[in-house]
Length: 240
Ligand SMILES: Nc1nc2c(ncn2[C@@H]2O[C@H](COP(=O)(O)OP(=O)(O)OP(=O)(O)O)[C@@H](O)[C@H]2O)c(=O)[nH]1
Ligand SMILES: [Mg+2]
Image (cartoon, rainbow, N blue to C red; front, side, top):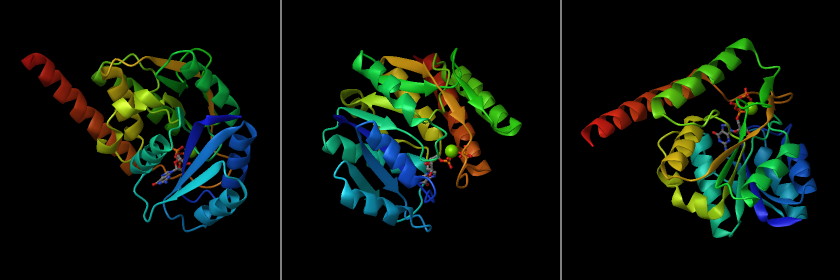
């Protein structure tokens, strides 16, 4: 049991995955917080049913779908209020293997402020993703890494563990991005704050059940914001 660890899982129409993902997290002995944006398929109600039988599960209901960023920001606020010491991010669709959570948490236990489950360090990778998703993810990461001048190889990764005191230093409530640009924004903030970031290799697998929420709008938002931050940073450096 690790009552000090809370795994935050955002959900939107994950009725086919939420029971199994909850069982996997609870089986590892970690607390679970589901952040559901009023899923029309009843994910939130299913999660409520699980929470009624297990005090280690919490459900945060939000009224409308606002994207990953605001869902995580609300989840982080609650996690810190509840005094969790290690706060994890994980998708509900098993693209992130819950069995990798102990390695992420171990990295934080041994000193990292932020552990990122990374596809782009030796030992990491992607399985059964279509070529256009691979290209988008790889290209997006190279673009973000170059423009933002960070050493983090997988900026868009959504499988993470934060030490609570490190998370408190990051102004997650003011993040601009609502899609996976949020992940880039958080990794960049952590890097600028001088926090110790450790990338832990993971294999990312395409979802087996349920439908993707990823769309062109999310990718464009991330690209636009990275460009804006990168250019702003460059001008700021020149002025300094
Ligand atoms: N609360 C909330 N969760 C969301 C929202 N959008 C996506 N999610 C969840 O965030 C996680 C990642 O979303 P996915 O749809 O799997 O996006 P993705 O992993 O980039 O896309 P795929 O690889 O195609 O599955 C999943 O657990 C989703 O249910 C949202 O607007 N609100
Ligand atoms: Mg997914």
